[in-house]
Length: 591
Image (cartoon, rainbow, N blue to C red; front, top):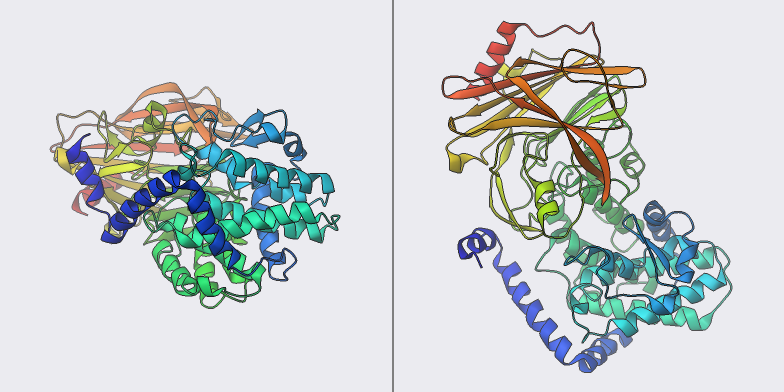
């Protein structure tokens, strides 16, 4: 074990997180060794809870929200589930029947349990039961029984994935919503199947209430509390055992949601999922007080992370298809002009179907940056409503070279130092040393472009330098990207830009691409384009798409180096004057 790296990681954790992490590990050991006793103990707590009613009036709106989410992930009718066929994060698995489900398999994720957990979330039950077919209800009950049989607390690893509070929270929400939709669809009564499902839901509620994830906190802990709120809605009121819940929800929302409405973990995908969670809270009469303002701010912030195609930028751990498209979730037009999310650290420039989304904020909260990528000062660009410069996305959550490479600075569209990282990643979600980015707001940077944003980061301070970037958008015409590196004279520095192969290479001066009637070309005012190489990206989890990587090397200077890339899609666009560029770099150096 690298003790110095471990210290650089845990030094940011709160005393509360460290205490509950140790307590959880000890509790899991005790539950695994004394599995029957632990089941009886939690079972007694479950028996003390008021029984949930899948026909409770408060569940109807909740179920509609959950259905929209699960249809995005599993389609309108995942009928194959009843025969043991599942699609989990874009891969198909056929177990030959629900009695043969391999709950403890690795599902092509190696040491990471993500697909195993998604199978255990049972989100597929929601669109399946929405059709009101009795065969499907019996199948879901059978899946529940299969999970319980194969994942006893004594089973190696079960308490780390299928039976952790996050998985149990998802399962509780999904099963209650599925039953509510089944009844609304006029499904035939099946007391035995409903009883098996509701008994499991009750056990999940007691399990989560006993051990919410106060070690990880953030989106995990909020999901725990949302699950308990859904149970309370189904039970017709807040059970005495949940008397902590109202204050806990308020505290969790303060932790997760920043003043500008952004999510503290700086992932647009997790932000969209959190909007749905807060919509669930707002739909209950039990927890609606004070939630509406938070929800409004979250929707406005989500619009600021959205492309003209209506879906999210893929900064940090984000991919498409995990949540409904952002425009649907937010219910807002993304609009034109400049949006600056000052607390989150994102900026959006947009007009005439073009948009730049720019990351100039922290990689995440210091006490839980697990979803961070080294995408400081990275950007995404849409031209004429189509994504042109894209984030690499997420190929896997499994620790290893693919995970490391996809999180690296070189994989993203930001200025970086070759072979060095502004963030110290290890394992799947660990972060040791980490730099910090900030937005640059200086009047000296204004005036060169109609819409602009700028930022700096200190992720290379340990190498004796820093990095700054200006982005200007001329809607309908062009983008200027001006990068400046200070210090680090003995280091190779670059800016990379990733273009998906949905755009075709075209003839032109410098790299050029075409899609439909739109023709885009690259040129440099400072520095030079040093290469156009074949690459890949993963806009959907584990779904590889071809791409082109354009690399820009800077021009040398006295104590600093500069690169200015001009991306143009209107031949009549007016280029910035050389003196304006000189003034721009002087201003960047002075900020």
